[in-house]
Amino acid sequence: MASALICSFRFGRSVAVRLVFLSFGVVVSTSAAYAQDGVAARSKPVPASGKILNAHGKPPLVACRITFWPMDSPKQFVERYKSVPFCISGENGQFAMMLNAKQPGAPPGRYRVTVTAIREEDEKAMAIPKRYRDHEATPWEIVIPAEGRTDILLRIELQ
Image (cartoon, rainbow, N blue to C red; front, side):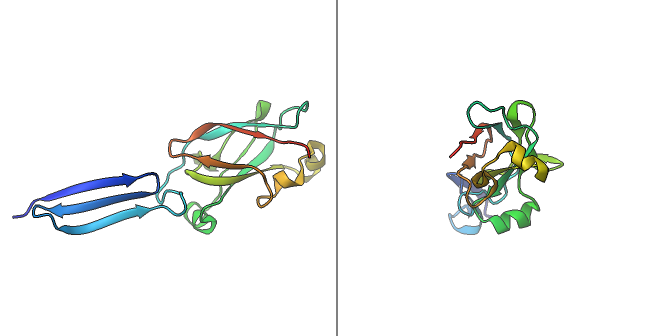
């Protein structure tokens, strides 16, 4: 009767491979979890929080929507999670991302970040430049590592 040895290997954050060896050294099965462009294939949300600041001399942005737009395989991301991470900024501009109402945090990966007023009539009052409201034009790109990130600082700069 042959005995089996299961070995797991992790190569960075992107590939995990499990090999099953029989006692005489032949690989009988393999399984791998591959990541698409740096996003773990089976990632659960991890903590993602920080602060959003307005241009110098202005108060922090309170009660605005912050959205994380996945940069790596966005279609697959939305198919898997049925949402993109978002939140509403709180007192002093503090924010904590949520994947949905039951899942705080954001899956590890690369994101573009946008900020918008919750109500259209607040858009002018908040004076958020257009580039921060457009996920293709935003200058904000962040990475959420596998352990999460709680020190995100978003600062709106005037042109």
